[in-house]
Length: 115
Image (cartoon, rainbow, N blue to C red; front, side, top):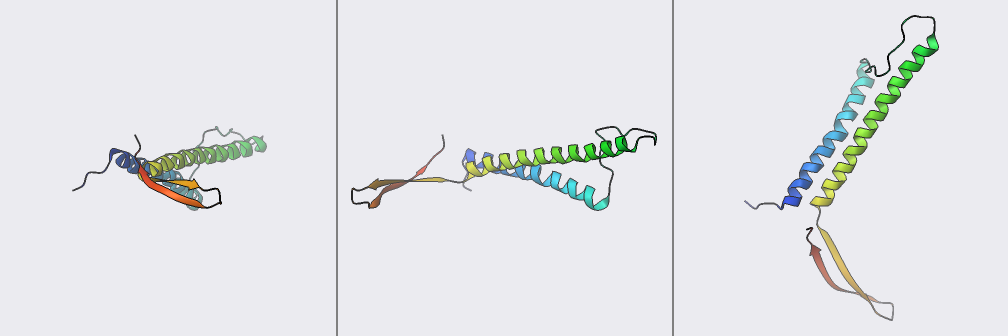
């Protein structure tokens, strides 16, 4: 069995962690939307019925806060995933030489190793 390079192993781990960070908030948001479960109360809802505006504002602010928390977690997951993909893929460099006539010829291609 061929042993992978440590960078690739770390890349795959980062890719999986990033995908988990993307999938879980999306699944939670979908479950809240589809099943009608209670949204977590980050801003307490005022008791009493004399001020309906304050109740509506508290509910709206709870929805916005949960949305932004999910968005930040998904954004972090996308960054982690992109770092993992960068570690997984091999980078190929092409060295090109331009001649005075406007023609470009490839001198050599090489694979770079990340150190």
